[in-house]
Length: 376
Image (cartoon, rainbow, N blue to C red):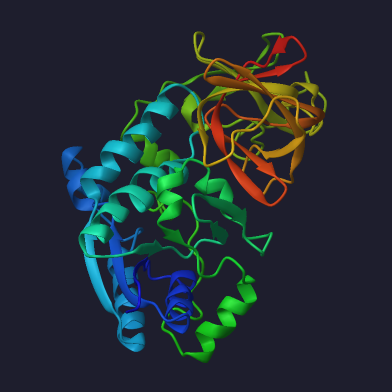
């Protein structure tokens, strides 16, 4: 009897082709469409019905997922995880911004929704495994599983999977992890799927194409303040520290100023106590660089990194690997990198790799250049 797999079918091309691959491999395949955000309900909570729009077109995605399921002859379940998403992902997202940090909600969505709430529902429906259209690979052994980078280096999504557990990985399959994106598109076209030419989704679903500042303003009060240089000279005004991230250049709105040279400005720090955004000039501004950091909320999927052994790390998605070493401080870690890294940002994940294996990660708290703590 074939093993039953329930696939997260999002209405995108990647999960659509994942369904084809699973069927080719002989699994008994069903699919599940997750509804994680309710614009009407959440805007009503805020008492602001004017926010209603279709910038997060979940109904369109559902219809595309249904068209794919019907084409391939598989059953599609539809389930709401709105309350869970609000409690475990969106609340975290807002809390982190409130602290002046830059969170990555996709990582928490994987940890708490796609590989937790979804997994539980799939098991209730009798699944042996769940599957997702992530560009990642898993290798299952008799007593453990390891997470491997996707073959398509440009699309590898293990960064976003760094917080899943061994148990979650043991129950998971990634059918397109050994494929290139162009191969995925080719298969979708061959099967004439509704999603074959669909544009890849970008950004966070609950924001969609909406203006980020306008969206965030409805959940956090804006506190304008001064943009200042590292030595305290006022250059301009900011709209609220939460709207800016370390290394940001665009959207600062700084015009010509005779007191400073004519070179671009970048965000190099934040002072929450003074509500000041610290800015500096030059792409290679020394205050953008660091050589070690401290991180917490460590999650190791199988093997815990060893102290002083060489590994590599990513401090943001699609960043090139940086050689690192790990030092433990109780439950937290220090990550040391001799090759300077730019714009390492609190709230983001530091993800550790041993060659092709993703070992897990931690959330960045403090960033240093030698003994000098960066003001972010």
